[in-house]
Image (tube, rainbow, N blue to C red; front, side):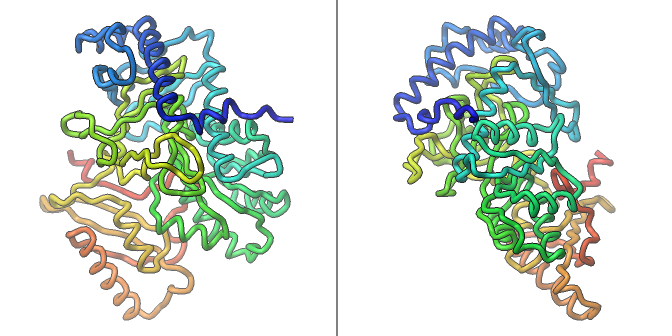
Length: 435
């Protein structure tokens, strides 16, 4: 019999009691960091802050921010807060935008991370009768092992299939009766497309999916739900903080509950660093208050969202974060206009297009070029050039109405855009080659 995940009653703890717990853990964590991480201690001293200045969460704003640049500068061991002999695992970011970030875990860090992911699974109805199909990648990426550990804690039978080999994925789903799918939303869309092509939708027993690790829109959620016949839930996490399970959706789906007994969330003005009140949009900042090996204080995520403590019908008292509205570092500035890929996806899905697209930005004659390749569905695919041209013009107009800038839209043949088994590559910005 699997061990029940750790203290589920904390999820419904009265808010004042929860804040007292956060204060107690924050004070202890700041002292832990001060004593064990010279890099942090130097940042705090530079700001004139010592552990004696932090008496509770009301003093959190006194601490300096930490950014991904700090993590890269301190690579690999500069932010390690526990003896290496006490660490049992690392995970790492992809390193596609710079030097890799390596995060360390003690066994207790792993156990608490498993608890957070177990909460996410139980929130979507998972229990010991369920078969959890984990199609996130295993290895340095946190997705696979995170949901894998959570599924064990929740008492579920777990299929550690990892990403790729779509034929095997579908075979296991049908033969083993997978009920909960865990993967990126783009791979869920690809699996749905593949299941439909094989004509085996009636053999699939999925009832829910937990999708994260990349941005996805409400339109994409509805598309996945319709094609797989499931309810699709969002999950949020960062390698720097632990991985998936920092927050997750419940059945109300009006935001993701943050595991506040492990993480303190703030919203700040991304330009000034000023802490903003609940309900205002800004940059999300996290402080981990239970991590032993790699605790981050006031880590700037670059994700733009809103926090709300409005009472939830599920009974959980932990604050909710809205689905991130984009990342301040993912935003494209094209001909002086701010463009988020999520805006483009919304338009495409509202116009009945597939979620398979790619944005290509380049620079010619000192002017930005803006092209969007959009895959047609099999039903839409036509050799009638006039029909294709008319649809392209319609998409150009809809995108301009949303973005305020004109793009060139190219409708391409089904399956001509390379499928991703991990995070989808939505943007190719060739301008970076010239900067």
